[in-house]
Amino acid sequence: MNRLNNVVIKLWLTIILIVTTVLILLSVALITFIQSYFTQDTEEHLKDNAERISHLVEHTDDNKTAIEHSRSLIEGPVGLIIMKDEQAVAREREDQSKVKMLNAIKRNKDYKKVFSQGKHISEHVTIKVDGKPRTYVLIGYPTKHLSSKQDNQGQYSGVFIYQDLKSIEQTTNVIAVIILAIAVIFLAITTVFAFFLSSRITKPLRQLKTQALKVSRGEYTQTLPIHTKDEIGELSRAFNTMSSEIQQHIEAISSSKNIRDSLLNSMVEGVLGFNDNKEIIISNSMAEHILKTLDDVTISQLVDQYQRTLDEQQTQFGEYEINTRYYVIIMSYIDQIQPDGRSGAVAIIRDMTNEHNVDQMKKDFIANVSHELRTPISLLQGYTESIVDGIVTEPDEIKDSLSIVLDETKRLNRLVNELLNVARMDAEGLSVEKELQPIDYLLNKIQQKYRQQATDLQLNLNLNPETDGRLWSYDSDRIEQVLTNLIDNAARYTEPHDSITIRVDENESEDILYITDTGSGIAPEHLEQVFERFYKVDAARKRGKQGTGLGLFICRMIIEEHGGQIDVESELGEGTTFIIKLPKPKQNDA
Image (tube, rainbow, N blue to C red):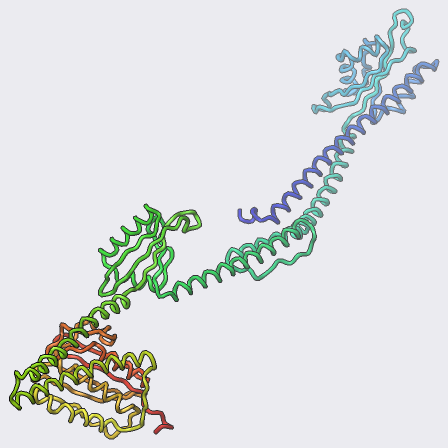
């Protein structure tokens, strides 16, 4: 069945069917024509013979001798019956075929016209010979000489000549066999020629089919060879043009899609596209990441915002807080978001966490700085007024009051210096002068610096581990500032009998410091923000005075300027570890 669907086979069978039909019709027409021609020729020949015999009988005096001569000349393949009138009977020695033919003449009413009207009659007569029906051509021709009463009664005698059509049938059969043989030969030649012609005609079509299948699979580079200038050649040329244009369009669409995807994925905002069935048809990686963090309540709120956008066909705004992250979702109506004309909406998800935190930190900073400044200023004002007004008159009391004034002045100076340092770092950047030196000296200095404070606070300090005198590349003043800040923070987060420890380690490319305390720890939601400016974890603070929230921010700036990084690990109630990683000195530096 599949072979019959082949265009070559179809065209080949069509040509064969046409040629076969033409040959059959032509053969039938030729055989019919030849058979008719021979039959008519035989009739004409028999008629001519009958006419000559009639003429011979009419113009001779010896009728009997003329008839005998006629019989000897005609009879054989041709039968001859001469009847003086309608009532003539066969002679006793006549053969059975002639007797039956004579009876057939008598039975046929048309042959009576030969005797009565002198007309010649030609018909086909079928008689049985040896039990088999045989058809003869029978010619009846009138003559006058034999009848003795023709002048008075107007009657004629008849000369009847007949011939078996079997000889004609044999001739036509031979001719039919010849015609059929020639037809078969022509059919065979036509078969080969038709197959060759159909293959040649359909070859470009088969190539076109193959190329069309390749195009359907996305292969557009190959082109069809064009060998002719007919309609098939024009079709191949048009197909090549179409493939080229499709390739150009697909490349343009792919390029546009790649640009769109790159732009979407490079956006800091999340992008989502929905159709009217709430199916996501466009998204970028940021949006997919945000969707994974949504809970059921937030998803329900998002669906409500989407529905309002479709109903009102106007841009809708929504604010969402998800796991300490703050998002603003702007959703706009799109009249046709898919090629089938379906409407939908596009949502832009902006992560406003940093902005929210900065705003909150600014508010906290203003409150904290106001509080931090107000406390020492109030103390300065109070003790100064006590001394000026003479309330405090004893030398020891005056000394104590002045000591408090000095401490608060130093505190104010530290607060102002931190603010100035941050402002200077933002404006000018942070300068670091690294030197190749051991870390032992700095760690011993820190241990001595906090010895008295550790005794006062009942803390266990181990800040100078053994480093085997290895050389580190760092700015001593800056790293001291970092360690001082971290130790101060650890002291505020600890209770009596807690420990503060510094450990050293290394890997292939970095020298590592671990500053660990066993204090109150930091809640997980605060870990990612402790290094932000103005950020403070007030709830975890246990002792000491509050700062500005700039200490850890300055630490991070110093470590990053060294080319390293600072991280924090903490568990609430278990303690905190700050990890400082500094690049190892290069070989040429060593």
